[in-house]
Image (tube, rainbow, N blue to C red; front, side, top):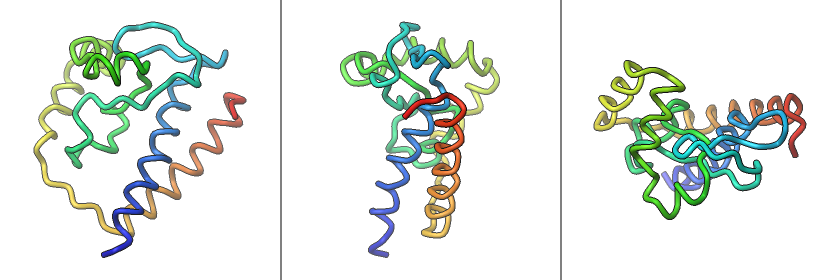
Length: 134
C-alpha cells in the first residue's frame, strides 16, 4: 500500500499539533511533562514516553505529552522526569498499563489512518478556538 507511509507522516503532524494544543494553557504557554518548566507554546514538542517506534503507543494520548525541546531532543526524553510527570497527570496504574502495551502488535489500516487524521483535525480546530492559539 503506497499510501500508508504518507498517511503515517500526515497523522504524525496532525497528532503532534493536537497534543501540543491539548496541553497548552490559556496564556499561550505549556508545562513540560518532564522538567516542569513553563515555556511558550511555540517551543513545545510532542514528546513520547514510550518511543515512537512502538506503534501500539505511538498515537496514545497518554503516552504523548507536551515536552520542552531541551528534554525531548537533547536529554533523551528525560525519561525519569517524564515518568514522574505521567504519575502526577494520570496516576501510577495508568502508567503501568501504558508500559505493558509497549510490545503489543498494532497494525493500522489506511482507513484507520484516515479516520484518525480527520478526528484530530477537528480536535485541532476546536482547541485553537477554545485556547485562541493560531
